[in-house]
Length: 460
Image (spheres, rainbow, N blue to C red):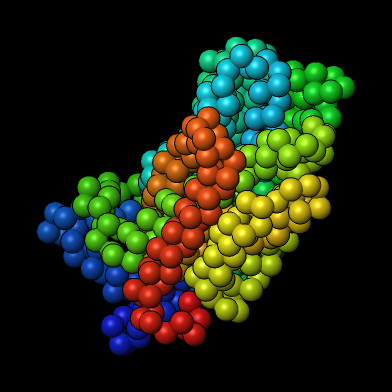
């Protein structure tokens, strides 16, 4: 959308997406305005509400590096550690609740706790994204940090099912949503050509958190009890979120112009974006089933409880490699290309390897490989949105993608629990996960084709 002589139609979809990486708003130092700003001014004169006006701090050119940009990545990394790193421990809690305080509840009922975590982390996406686009990230990150820590502190005092639902499944998850959506959206204001690497570095925070938290929680539950295990985790998260609050900074200065209602449905007029949303709705079905049930499947196969719980840490350790690697590779081969290949491989591994898996070696091998390839989901999801979206709408559009994935996040575990209670048992659950992963990836491939045409060699 930069002000140039050529039109978007002349440049083609890939070039148009590249141009969207530049933020073409009024520069505070020069006072120069581009055609987009002049159009917005004309609309004001005739009484038409315009989209949220923003100006860019210091320059309209995305830095793609430098101390300030990498400090933002540090804050985003800490947010990722505390947000998705914590969410990635759901398998550990599933096993603990089934054998501990909630042993009288079914697997399907217990699974509503992690499902609500995933759901609320994503359900509020459009609202949080809209607030971000209009007001910035500061108040969102502060409130989100408080709710995440407060929710975990309350969970440490909980012993009843409804208490755990409200504290861990609702309060903490809402805080996670506010912090994480701000962190993942602000990266696109600081990085363009190295955006994949930036997202990949941020996503490793979730992997490191997913390694640290399961080991820490499971060991501390055995030694000092569930309450102090949760409180210790909350204190660790508090320290890291203080760093997030100090380092995350947006380059845009909001003017709080009233947003027209028509802008809420604008993304749904773009077929490629709608198809992308459909794909990102289906993929979580294939992702969260293994993440949640790998330990339970291992227990059913005869592995010891400690080893089964450590599989969560093994998954997240291998996912770290996948998230960083897919981010780096995507800058060379294209965000969509890298995401599609990685997710097709993830679905294939579920169907070809997890279904017949028996014994420790095969289970660990599947966990490692699935972690590597599925890492692209967290690393590149926001990059897919940024590739085909105008920068001034990134908060809202990222929120929409999280909202859509929230539906899958909410119902995946209950569906899985229901499948386990039926005659299909573990095989039926694994088939369900693999088919959903491949179906969602196929929809994202269709979105890519809508933007680039049938040329599969295009870097996109």
